[in-house]
Length: 407
Image (cartoon, rainbow, N blue to C red; front, side, top):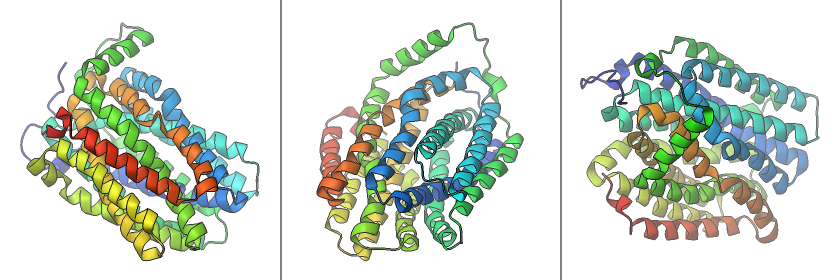
């Protein structure tokens, strides 16, 4: 079944009301997520003074995608995507209020935070899968690269502003205020999504298959798509290095460069500046060089950034390296997600997103947990160096495949 043409004329994508609603919701959620992502590791670290505790928290947050991603994809293909997205947003708001209460009452038992983090990321992935599906339903295929670039632009723009906001929040008397602000942002987004038109009725089909049959159909479609399968394997490997470096950079800044929490937040914003720059040009890069070149190039640029972090001995060097890493991450994300959308029919987008989303992250929990011990044994720089080497290897392997020549 083909995707219905919501708008086949060359008018601006901003004339698409549903897309605009998704963009605004992405903006709000990106601010909320950035505050949460930066505050929580700092809160856990100040509570425990343990890199292992922080990496364990990140591991708990990564597990849902690995355990439930495939099943969430099947569910999204079977339900009303707008209502599902609203449920996911509402649940996250309630969970964040609960976490804020625990921090307010000075609860230092870590397990409740791990459980809440696990549930938050379960709902977060449930929403993200629905967002991908809604984008596929509402955006014509010739606008998909532009749409993903705009999503990336917003997320990276918030990457610049989020750390600054987090730094200001850290100056408040109570850290839990930042978590509660995040909860309010999620609640606002819940009401915004009531205005969304999903166009789901345009491709509605009567579900006669069982849950397992739908899952099997999605898996066989994924395995039959050799380009998508190969791309997924490369993303699986690259995501491992990206996840550990982003967390390790915080440890490195605080422990080895002796930076304050607010200074760490401000320095991390350089990654957002780099991503912002890349998101402006990624569509032009694809048109000129091809999607495969952009994706492969992001790996070697990441390697350069991680090498810079390994050699960093002052704040300015770290900031420049973060800028380069952010630039590479935006190229990587836009090309990867655009490739998946273009390779997937609308009626399978939930399942393919779930399957690939799980595959994307299958190595991340173990890698994240082990990285905490690497930092304890050999220091933060061991993570940067090993990640740089991994990206160089991936780049050279990628250039030997047909994906390198993807347009």
